[in-house]
Amino acid sequence: MSRAKEELYERLANAVLELDEDLTKELSHEVIDQGFDAWEAIEQGLLIGINQAGKLFDEEEYFVPELLIAADAMYAGLDILRPYVKDHSTGNPRRVVIGVVQGDTHDIGKNLVRIMLEVSGFEVFDLGRDVPARRFVDRAVEVKADIIALSTLMTTTMDQMAEVIRILEAENIRKNFKVIVGGSPLSQQFSDRIGADGYAPKAALAVQLAKRLSGLVNAA
Amino acid sequence: MSAAVETDVKRDELTSLERVGLALQYKKPDRVPAAPLVCGASSRVLGISYDRWSQDPKAATASLLAAQGLIGFDGFLTLVDLSVEAEDFGQEVIFPERSTAYPNFDDPFIKTADDYGKVVSVDPRKSRRMSSVIEIVRGLAEAKGKDVAVMGFVYGPLGVLSQIRGHAELFKDLIRHPDRVLEAVEIINRVLIDYAIAQVEAGAHAIVLDPLYSSASILKKETWVKFEAVFISAVADAVRGAGVPVVVHNCGGGVYFDAVMEHINPIAISHAYPAHGSANWEEHAANWAKKVVTIGVADPAKVGHEFSQAEVLEDCRREIETFKIAEGGFILSSGCEFPPNGNLLSARTMVQASKLYGRY
Image 1 (cartoon, rainbow over the protein chains, first blue to last red):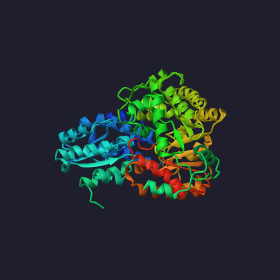
Image 2: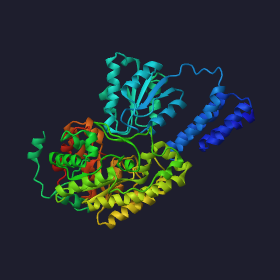
Image 3: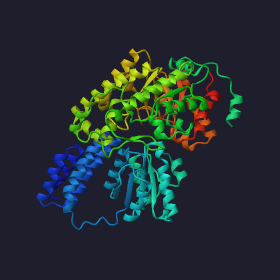
């Protein structure tokens, strides 16, 4: 890799890490103007930057605001670079339908999981917040998802997760999907009780869980 | 099983109010007070829909009184939902028939950073929802205030703002538009001072402030101090000035106890997780139980949804044991609101646990 290209990717990573959305956009345009490979810039610039931000989040150097803005910067760069990605095959990306269940609008945790899943190579279909159980199922069928990821922060809406599984079972399509759950009031006990395939107490662990359930890594 | 438990325990010697009052002073009462945060769950005692319970102060008051009669908890908390203040500042709120009310974030009151200027002062005694909570406090205090602790509730100014801007957008604005956020927080905080005082005047024995974002799971400590602590301290001072103690509730992970103590200086903290810097409950108790009264710490989802009654008893026994180090400064409770759709028998079992295992 040329020195100029290497430096540009490093600056791109730093722009994301330093929460500078404008600079991320500017550098992403520069990647295109210089004729560099867009996918390479995503992998070695944007994703490096957001991964470093995630590491700082784990180390309590960054907190939710910083991580959200780093993600905004990354997505801004992706919007510019994505149309120029050519002939890049990611193999067979696993698909995840994710959302916050009906009655709950707390979506920070869900957003963090979405970002980390995307960074890890999953194709993510984000249904947002306050999502009816039926919609999770319909969308998962439509996009042939591998995983349905359900989030809630409230005890009153936990049962909506069970409702998603009830619909899958009633329609004899339960085995087509892995269902994972997460959120502050949840526990492995709750996950087991409703018949989910997995529970993750933290965003980073949700990615490991998704990888394990979709066969991307071996169960350990 | 609860009938068997009743026959095994000594008769209480103090009223609930006396019991809670002594615990808040680190004086050992007859037993550990038990106050699972039964709020919305009370609606089911009288079979009232949640949306009515949330908006009809007479119905809510009657429900809370009936729940106290059934469960025997030692303190009322007038937490209706975290959108009470937000609606009065202009946010549209959705009231499900059988769940907690929440803001319609498809239509946030503050849509852009420029909209922070739309936040204007309101009179909590006249606005629809805050006045309703004030009436609940008054109703509870008049009916049971001589015997049972009545704790008012005020959501912190940054929390209120997050309910009218959207959580993620507000957090980003803390970095992108700090001055606009601070202006709005200041206006909201002035209203919250009035709101807290109105609850004291209505008969609250204590005011519970909820600075939810004083938590390492969300914000850096310095960020919380800058955007909320320096404001909410004025609410705390006003409450103390009105003659009643301040309690803090925060069900977030890794609460910054040091900063909360420095800026709010509550008499007690109600919480669900060990403080920031404490790896487990034993470490937390060693670090904090003698510095500030603990209210908690049962996992509400487990107690309300997962545990058998025997497991609830055992969980509470463990907590009482862990906080013996507090020398009386412990109130057994759920670390957050008792699940509104949880098993009410479990709340009653928590009270039974305090009678079985919490005698001093």
